[in-house]
Image (cartoon, rainbow, N blue to C red; front, side):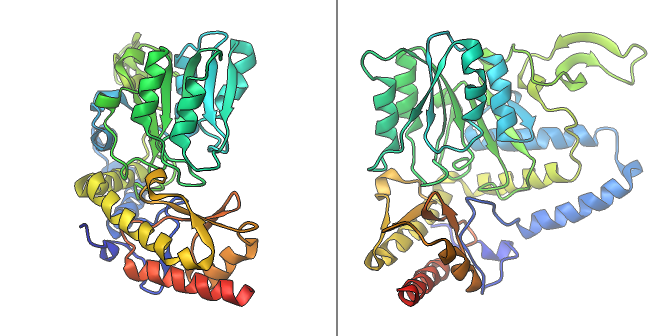
Length: 385
């Protein structure tokens, strides 16, 4: 099993940080690269002419490697919402169809469709959070509900951010394909940990950022676009998305045709000399460890937590229904709001999400962290009682 990688992070031994589903710490290597990059930006004359291109392509290749995509199928974007908005402009949702979203899913894969529904003539159907935690069954039931209008698109997260529920995207894709429906996946809480192969799955789009599980910075995200959709009009009109708009040529607007791959969807102002390299490092580290190894280690840690809190009157989703790296704990009457702060005062860091306690270890955590969490939670619950 992959051992704890704490030595690669600036996480003191007395800090029990179990909140990577919110934002992960950066590896020491990434911190060093960021400091060097800031200094480099302070002296821009030291940058060679090909520097930006090398950074773009390094990040593109690293992102593609995580999901078994071709680099040509990856666009550089700033956020999940940007990627969803791009696909909303590219995809045509048939009128009188349904766009399926998840209740309490993050705003990014949801709100764009609400904003477009009336004008484009489709309806947004929200799949209610299932009482038994089985998101996959709930999604499949909604897709195949007798007498319902056909599904035009599902825009859902592969792992639900609030309860850690795991959606079987392969089963969902098969159901969507039977209706000729499209699939946009927000892989924010899954990329790098839950193995995903877009060549096998064949979604229409898949989007993920780096600041959570990919141990990278804010503001860097990546959009996979299936080749069948690489002929659309981008969200932004940029010189990089055209075949030959170049300030070094005698004629600036030489060829306005779009490039023939997902690079046409790259964001404007993409020369992030500081954070793009930082994003690449985190993605490369995760790919080197491999999703299978990371997932196995984190599943062991979350199960250790679930087992440890069982006698505290705390409930968790069944292991088969939750992602390996997130365990969401429920208490009768809901988690007391001040409990999260009381844990933080003991240097134990978790998150309150929709009335439940979300606990999310990463590769820098170890068994001592999980045991400490259980012990501190036990004492805090007993003291409150």
